[in-house]
Length: 217
Image 1: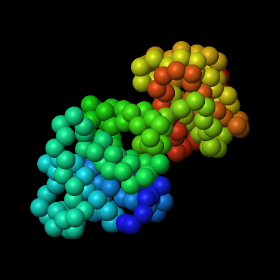
Image 2: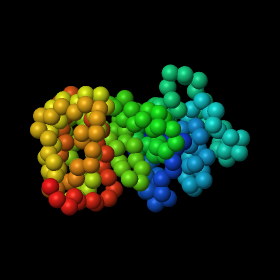
Image 3: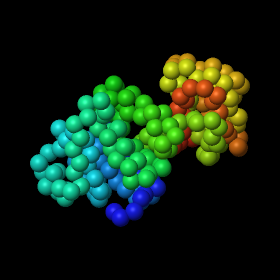
Image 4: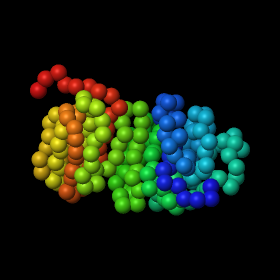
């Protein structure tokens, strides 16, 4: 690659998404990066991997032989995860939108830690965790939810979030304080435009890929 990219895809070492979703993510990306053991899963899914980044403790010899040596980047930084290393590689290439997939499943601590990278890179890139159920992104100021009526959405505060205000959802909030709790789980889009705003704190929006309108109020 001779120039900067805008949109990148990172394949972590968790549960791989459906072939159709993965193909769509890869098609939009100008750079595909595997986080260590994610390389084997990306290759099995038929992706062309531009780089493998991490401490490489999960990279098998068979996978290593499938990838040009110059595209394998080892880092010994014990203060960051392989996923962080992969994201930072994308940032170095100029990426401003980074989709992370295969970030869930397996160990709950790893899954939660993978979600924590979304607010960690606030102001550097729009990092989203994507799987077959949700697209998860940071609410930075005010964002609009572009989804059909009935789409399931959840709001999860990482820590304490103040001044949470929504419009267009079935159960709206006005200047609400959300702690790290189930309080914002399983709402739905009721009308357009649907928006979510937060004044302070790290608020994650889980935008579902399915429609499930509640039967009644």
